Picture: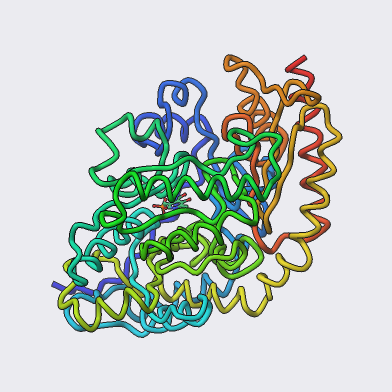
Length: 465
Ligand code: PLP
């Protein structure tokens, strides 16, 4: 038998009608985080192509993607360098693993390049297929670290209420999403949570930095309640993304760092959203002023063009693992996947060439902050905040008192519906409307987005009054 027959790849059938796609979708495709009852009556919106910061659906409608897909398309859609890197690597070597004392050039190069953009002290990278797997790796690595150091009783990892660290058993446990915990008996043992540094909820009227210190003090309270000798690590997102773009006061992270140092516990920064330029530095911990021991990454490492995640491992943990640890019994088939790593290399080089980190920090980040703040004159908008190219606005019923809408009015979903119908993708988290647009966005495109946001807020207001 001839085993290298050239078979043309089948074209993805673009010929079905939207209705036909929707029928096949509801018949076969179980979507993540979706109520399928609602979906099958309405039908999915079928997204068929993308360019720069725009998407098109199967009906030809254009949408400005203010969420970068799912917080990931940092370099925007259609970047030829990434497409070429994947194509080249698929031809050259589509797969080989890194289990048996083997490696591939792209996996080595990606680890090297990531180490060159991470803060000083991060020289090693462990690859996974996703952010969730990255956080599972964190749990195993942190516990292994304390084992190696002869302190196996240090098992407890502290996360935060409303934090998000993924959907695997450990990821969902580290996260503090009550809905997720309610399904499947989570969190797993030895994972506990403290409250999030969300001033609107926990410190209204307080001085911002005083609130930051107070919120950080909850970590010390928890460490003392658990027993410092049992605590292994603290994990947090520099800016909570899925929780609603909760930006902590400037005083928060340095105080968290001080507390971790005081008790010798490891600090883990989940950079899955904040990494690779989102906050105006390569990593969110640099913007927020902490020096973590481990950093989880995914999403922006390949701008979402292909799945890749991992953990950047700082010197303290790497030294123990490498010099004293023996075999670390952990890994995934796709740890260091050559095609994913080739795309990561092309993506990071493109971020460097286009100076996207500087673009966010010095140009579009401050511009977005200014434009977003101007929304506070809208009757529905209680507060706005941004950090780099991520932002949130809180929709309120009464601005003068800061009263939110009653539970039965899902104002966020009403607003999101108007956005979706009017060519804008924004996400709703409760009453917070959030954005995280591609980092390639220009000032003119921010203006275009702001005009769409205002229009959708007006439509939402008309519904709400
Ligand atoms: N960590 C954070 C901060 C995230 O936002 C996400 C996903 O949104 C994850 C981890 C999980 O990543 P993934 O969906 O790639 O498993």
